[in-house]
Length: 174
Image (cartoon, rainbow, N blue to C red; front, side):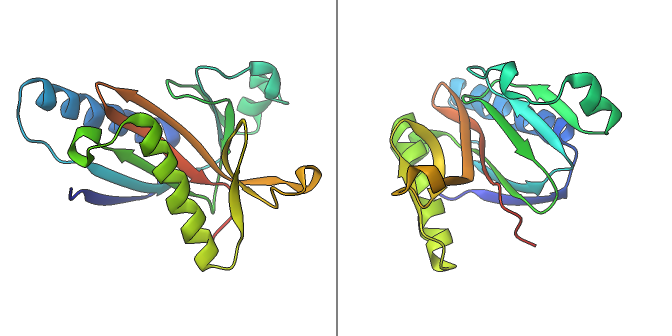
């Protein structure tokens, strides 16, 4: 159940996404061929960028893509679940490239465990986070819906029980 942790530092989103896809495809290929391959946990930070998941609605992006480009803000429509997510300086982004069979879990349990890890981690820092019904990610003050705010976005892709994409702590942590 071991995995390799790679700190990519501050990296352009496209470069990190291309690297994820390479690791993901290599892990799927190795799995299909019955070969051993390493699970990886990528940690990084991105310059200003918006990503839109498969089920996302472009109308949730409040700036048009021309304005984003003029301001030097990236935009990518990507192959993960979820809607629109902003990544930027100071945010911690984590991309697990895992073969879930290695851990003996399915995709739903994997997402639940990601959420639980975030809840326990931020709790250690005195932040009370929780899940909200029918809302992805981890939220602060979920008992008072009008005051709830997301602290962690979660969006994953899983194919042949191999994962990519992951989570972003969307508050600044530097």
